[in-house]
Image (cartoon, rainbow over all chains, first blue to last red; front, side, top):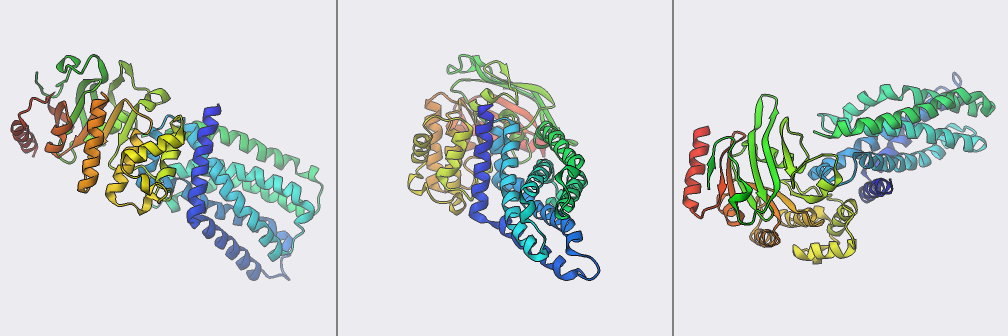
Length: 226
Length: 254
């Protein structure tokens, strides 16, 4: 177990360092996030729909598509010089490779979300601070779910033509449960409803994470082995 | 002793260096769609033996190496390391194999030292910093340790790839066209490293279509055509005869 975690950590640290050096995906995701939030903000008619009604959906659409940019890169960087073969040749388990990639993606998506959330509060003038604790919990749970599935799909899409187009096609159907739950919970939090009202949605999020993290670990080996 | 034909084999008894089969391959078969890349390939090598596999493009040489490395599953046949079947999930087996591939398997965005340190962590190499330093010195890249691999020339990348493949001291070294695209200095470094590996009695399988380079390093030679070993035998010193037979084998295919 310690070996597995050490190997996963090494792979995650390598991916984060590579992204830190190039910043290609991170800067793209941030620019994308700012643009989406700005466009939604200026495109909506404030007399027809209030910001508070639109905000939860916009927040999660922004997070989801910004995350795709990072998820696409997770295995694309292993395609360079066929570095994935180097990982597969090494004596680390496939689970360690998967967990390493998930960890690196969580750092990437979490960093984008940490910058996007204040921007979102700024553009839509929603009361984020009073519900920051529960909101961070929901963001964490939903992010774990879609990063777990997204990492698996990224490993499948990387060897296909038009991999960047293929990832959303493969991934989006699987994101319906966590994104729907996250939107429902976020809407209730912004509306000032008690946290106890979101219990069922929260259980769905936790259940999704447990089931899909386990399933993705199981299926990962078959997606990368020839 | 020379064996010919599809099931040609090199046995441990064929070489004085071979006291037992460090690497044994039995009737390997692998197809990609209707293309049969490996057709009944068999051989056995002892510790210290090195097999050069010659063949034209598309003969299945790289497929053979990928199967031996555990990167590709054969559809039939098996690979044995010291008599035990190669289990893809077995970390101990993977630790024994080093692959110098056609691609470098390196990260352009990491420095030479960071690339090696990363692989040293994955292989659980003791004294990582020392091992990385020695590996870089061994291929003449110590002064470029902190430079990004992406800034290296083809020859330097290949030297770094050699250092990566040998970092964990594998007992079986697989080489895919290792001299391809190398400048004189890089080729000389590689030759030196391979001679050292031979002296250390590592088992090597080298695939190439350059007969002269292959024969210089090999104790055994095989000619692979259309997925099949057309010839497989210990090197007997008659280089002109190998060139002739290689030409005959490839002409017969065409």
